[in-house]
Structures are given as structure tokens and as C-alpha cells.
Length: 369
Ligand SMILES: [Zn+2]
Ligand SMILES: [Zn+2]
Ligand SMILES: [Zn+2]
Image 1: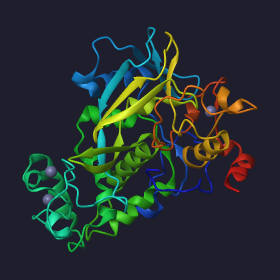
Image 2: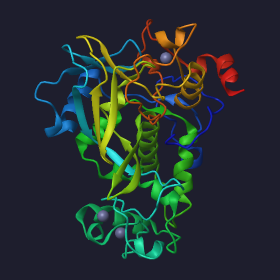
Image 3: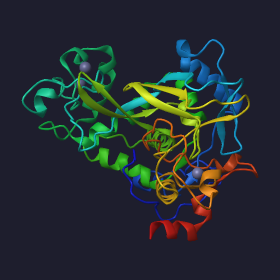
């Protein structure tokens, strides 16, 4: 999971649609616990913002459109018959940064993802003293300049080695460098609030002498982290033969709802580009779906995974089948990388087939036994 969490936290509850209560300092700023954060855009506005975001990658006449979904919240729907294997869209990230998992090589350039040569961590770190690993070419790039300035202003406590907690917050800190349309898109995305998510900021704050405490900045961080935890993918790719793992926000791909027998699959062309393809024929009008789990997992394994990490119970036909079998036509098996794409409760309809896990504490406790 991109948030590294192993279980559903206590106190998960359904949103009342309010934004988190404001407070004066960040450890208690999220004292209201889990909420569905308000979304500032209609589905139509979201679709328009996504078109701007796609830019030149937007197909001339897309085979799909963004619309409200009977499964959950918003989804993507075929506007014509789509053949198996057809590429549906490709998309660059809105926000991206290293996962900084311990299993990854931290001496990876935060911009071009190449391994930075050298004997130890200090060789890989920016010579200007921002604490970020960056290759010599990227160290002098315009892209690094803003991040470098910000991190130096906050004053990293540790410059003897690469600090994973400070590195992980980079993907969130990059929200400061979004333009106006990108910020509007960020606020148009579903974001499930959970006070647990603020831990990431607290951990990062401990790595700097002067981490910001201004409420508006912390609110923006928090919104971004919630959007990440609701929509982000862990993108795995290879750069010059070395494995790169990043946390990436793809606003369009993040709209794909889950089904245990999905009709679409995805792969990462590089660390910052996702490609979504039809895994089977998709008839006009059908919702395009992906699986947040491994397709061949058993029903129990899928239910446990979705319940504990995505916070919903799936009621798709495969899950409701009393004699569950592995998918008869397994599509390329996507990694269970989409985090916490939970039920969009505020918008959901009677026919919604997701059930928010918080509505079913008995099921949750069963799953967690
Ligand atoms: Zn580089
Ligand atoms: Zn720097
Ligand atoms: Zn299912």
C-alpha cells in the first residue's frame, strides 16, 4: 500500500461532507478523524480539468467519457464499442515522488530516476544541501531549483545520509508547484480523509528544523495526502536496468472503479506515464473497470485485501458467486497498487455495489480476525 498501512484504523466512519476542522497546530488539526472531503467540482468540470491535464495525450475522439458511476462515485464509460487490446488512454502524473520504501535504492535521482553514482549517500545528495538525492545534471535543473530552495529553507537536520521520511514527503510537497488548473484538478478528485494520513507529515516534520506550521499549508498538504491515499498508484518501472518505485497520482486512471473481473488493465510506460488498455471487448455504454487486487486471488483474499486496504466490500457478480473460481479469462494481472479507492459515499446511488466497510463493522472484524 502506498500508505504502508496494514489494517483498517479504528474509528473509520462515513463522511459528513465537511472539510477537516481547522486547528492551530498540525498534530491535532485532523482531530475530526475520517471524513469524505468535499469535492469542489461537478463531474462535468472534472472531465474538463482532466482534458486540460491530458493535454497532447488526449485522444482526438476518446472512446470513453467521465460520468457518474453506479458502482461508486465517478467512473469512465465506453462511448462506443471497444475491441480487446485497444489502448484507451495514456496519462502523465499530476504528482509523483519516490515511495522511499526501505527495499528501494534511495540513491535514485528524484527527477530522472537514474541511480546517482558514488560511494555513499552523501555522494548522491544535492551539493547545495537540500538533502535530496539528485544526479549532477538534474541538480542544476530548473525543476530541482524550487524544491531545493524549499528544502534548504526548512533546513534538513540530517545531511549525513538520505532520510527516507523526508524523501517520501517530496511527492506531497510538489503540490506547491502545481499551476492553478492543476490545483483545481487536485481539489476535484475524491479524497477520503483519515487522521492517520497526517502521520506522514509529522514524520517528515521531524526531519527539518523549520518545517511549516501555517495552517493553510498544512491543510493543503493534508488534502494532497488524502488524494494520494485515495487515488495513487505505486508505479514500478525500470530506468537503465534499475527498478524504480514511485507514488504517482493519475487523475483519469484513478477514476477507474474496481471489479474483480475487470475489462481493462494497465501498465507503466515509465515512472510517470500509465497506459490503460481494454482487456476484453467493451460494449458501448459499459463502465471501464480495473482490478485493485490480483485477478487470480481467491474471493477471500480479495475481500480481505479490499476491506483492509481500500475500505470497501466488493459485491460484484464474481464476489457474490457462491462457488467462486479464479477468473476464467485472466487479463494481465495488475498489481494491487491503487490505494484506498473507497466508496464515494456522498454521491453513491441505490444500485451502488460497493459497501463502505465502516457500514459493516461485523464484516470488518471478521476480516481482521
Ligand atoms: Zn537526474
Ligand atoms: Zn538541492
Ligand atoms: Zn468483486
